[in-house]
Image (cartoon, rainbow, N blue to C red; front, side, top):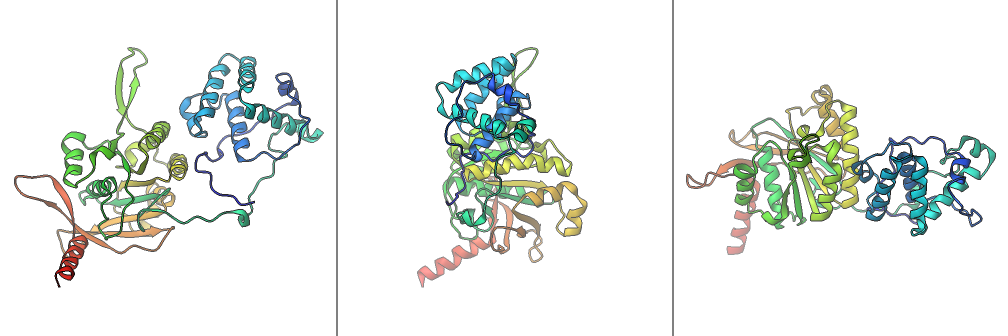
Length: 397
């Protein structure tokens, strides 16, 4: 049997703890016969059983937490109903489960799997651990290999995180908008390679949509109908009941980002700057925030560009900055902006790390302005200009 990645299902939670299931607890809530052909639960079975148990223990209590583990809308709705029922006690929880199982055969099967795992033998029954009789591990001989898919060849990979860092004032945000414009319109990238056309989600809380982001995207010839801002999130005030806008935070609003990716069929997510939305600064906290994001990116084949303010380039400099180390470790590709040694007013986009492809060449650029009548700044790529000039000469020769 060959295995291919299931991009429509979330990976099993790694932080969720499983405490004992007793045979009597489940037996009193079920009349389902276990006299059928036994099978080893697959990853989907295991995931739902883990979520089910987490809801019963009240480890999962919100819709956002459910979305981190279950992407299927039907089972998300079921889990949300069980979360509500659990607030009224364990008995109401299982009554609701049994009621749902009457119309969802898979729920009946999952209940049978629970009963099987708790009645297989006395040792398993004593420990009550649902994992005791589940075989874990996948042989790599059964894995179907996949090719890396690119939004921008060698620099932005689908399902992966790219980190772009550099000192303030070097044009990082403008490069991000230039890339967004090219992806939204399907125009070639600055190095002449093709881009994957699609929607772009922009999370940039530090810049105004009205006088900064929209004018610069328009100047870069973006398809504005394909660019979506997710800088703020509507929320209700707990006392007044008024709706207000708060800043997007990755550690609490990932479910909203996921639904926006699904609705817009996005190919690229840009977060600028990443530290403004993480809600974390310690290395382990940053990794914990980015791990669920990575799962979402892989599920929907979306590339993510994170922008970070920083000048660390050597391994020693990065190692001294815990946040930089955590971000670069989670990213599969690292890009850095440095001053151009040939043109003092220019900059160079260089690669500092890649785990998924060949190293990309340097690209040189300057931040330019068309004229006094049009003060919107834009990125002028020296390499792209040179390529166009050479192509023009060849065509006319």
